[in-house]
Image (cartoon, rainbow, N blue to C red):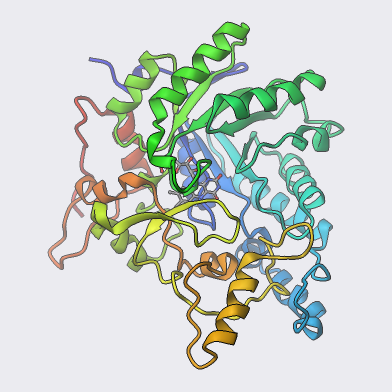
Length: 415
Ligand SMILES: Cc1cc2nc3c(=O)[nH]c(=O)nc-3n(C[C@H](O)[C@H](O)[C@H](O)COP(=O)(O)O)c2cc1C
């Protein structure tokens, strides 16, 4: 009977184990998790979310504070276009994180990073360029372009010396999005090295509408992408993502033409995950009805999370002088509007229901985003005597994906 361990993912002349750990911001897919994923021969992603704060957390820089001090006197202004990021700092922050992770790599596995287009950072084009250059300068093995169509992204790095040597992949949720990307890529004669097809059961933001996400399914979109590439004569590895909970499910995709699988939710509760221990227990305890797709993200995209996420209905004052990662090109964020409306409505007790301040709520792990299958996490580990669930290691989960047969899950050794 086949298992994922019988297959490999070949990108260029490198062979990986056919498991990609998806990027999980903010610092949920930590350098420690990524180093483990690579050590085990797979590919694992850092996330580029809140990169200056991550630099402060890991490297003792004080970028968030410095940005706040620079702009705090203007905090009364409604439009935040003034609160620009220092592009050199953005680039250097990504570079630091990548170098730090790559330097710990001990195997041929891959250290990749998700680069999100919708992380508009008050200057979408230039901050995107800075993040991609920082990652390439830092020696990243691969860039996965996510959360957006990325129609102009390759142009931003075509002059980088590593443009044709680092792996570049695109994450899509439809053939249409892939076609658009390929058209632009053809102009530079730089096809992606892989395509991740992310379905509607994934964690984080979704590439579907709030009203119709449930009418799509990963397998159908995946087959459409595989058929399209075949018709075009393009040999680009296709990697499905979103709701793949066991290695057996992964093998089913491989038999239909997948080169590997991308998975994330099962790693949220590992020892190496950046989520606080208490939050990991919330993930374990979740039942299916405790998970929802909502519109509280100010990006305008649907996002899946636990209904008990403290970010829902919180009323914190926006702090774009310090953060501002979701500010659009005109210096606006939908949370600011919702916050102001709520202050006018009920200044005594501010609870913003329709949007959340994604920057602060993600930095402090109050947005408990997860894939749809998170309700099965409790079945992947041991219940301990004190009523809590044991955190498996990244290695436990990785090896379970590799060796799973008949949809069985191999529980971690009891501690
Ligand atoms: C906690 C969490 C955080 C995520 N954060 C990001 C992110 O920062 N950027 C991104 O492109 N995708 C993000 N994702 C999506 C994953 O990288 C991945 O493609 C997807 O969740 C895979 O499906 P699964 O979680 O059902 O295995 C996140 C997913 C989770 C579960």
